[in-house]
Structure formats: C-alpha cells, structure tokens
Length: 193
Image 1 (cartoon, one colour):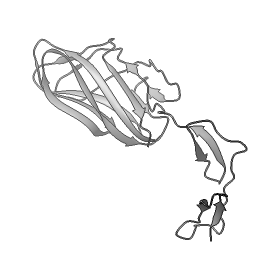
Image 2 (cartoon, rainbow, N blue to C red; image 1 turned 30 degrees about the horizontal axis):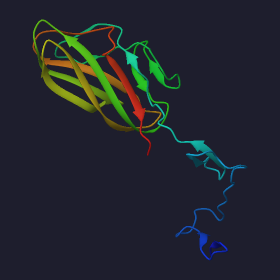
Image 3 (cartoon, rainbow, N blue to C red; image 1 turned 90 degrees about the vertical axis):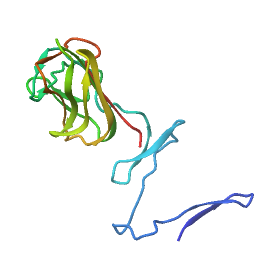
Image 4 (cartoon, rainbow, N blue to C red; image 1 turned 180 degrees about the vertical axis):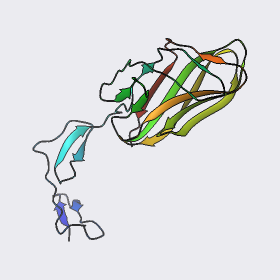
C-alpha cells in the first residue's frame, strides 16, 4: 500500500513502505513543526523524531602543536603535542599518554607533520599514526638531516578509538624531533558521507 499525492496537472508523488517487513510492528516518523532552511537535511534521533539540521564538515580532531623535543634511535618515540586546540569537543590527554580521541564517529582525513633534524641524514625514518596501538597511516623513508616528514590519509573511527603519533629512527645515530614549530602538528577533519 502506498500514499499517492496527485497534482491537478496529472503528475503524482508517492510514499511507499519499505520493500521488506519492518523490524517492529509499526514504524512512525514525527515530522518537524516547520520547514528547515536551504541546505538542511532531516535527522532522526533513532526514536522516530525528525528534525532539520545543517550538514557541515564537522572537525573530528583539532590542530595541536609540538611543545617538546624528543630523541629517537631504534625505538618508538611518541610525539608529545601541546593542547593548542581549536575544537574543545575533542579529547586530548597530554599529561602522560598524548592520545587524541575524536568527538565524532565516521571517516576522517588525518594529517600529522613533524620537523626533524640531526647531525646526519635520516636512514629508514618511520613516521606513523596509530589507532588503538596499531599503525593505520605510515611513512618509512630516508630524509635529509633537516626536513619535515608528513603522513596523511583517510581513517574510519568512532568516539572510543584513540590515536597517537610515533617516530622511529630505524637505523643510524640518534636524531631529534624539532619542537615548538607550527609545522609540527596533528589534525583531522571528518568527511561528509
């Protein structure tokens, strides 16, 4: 059974039930009291109540800048960021863990950058973003002794995940991570799906 609204000119618009049986005996939707504004979409609260909302590119993370200098040599070194946070909805633990927890679930474009320098060039320098302790975005390369390493990509996450940024000088002498510079950062934006 469907509801058909017919225009005086003869054309019509129909509302049809789902092709398979609903999971509950009745499915009811409560429409908003008024029309939304241009560009808004209907959103459900999961209980049948619909409302108009603006669809935006909601930040999943914020920009954080590095505030300390670290040394890495054949061991994992977590990049220690400071809270220069442009979106206070996110969680960032900079006391001991230096973990980023997103405020929203979905797919996000993440990017991290670190300024590195040393007395010699970098051999097999590893730079990665880890989700819940597992590498999800990784770059392994050789760099000049004064350069900027960047890793980026799209990652699926939810609000219980956490992200960390690691570096590792896989071989060679100790190398330093430059601190206190705008180009040492971690950030991310949720993609509209």
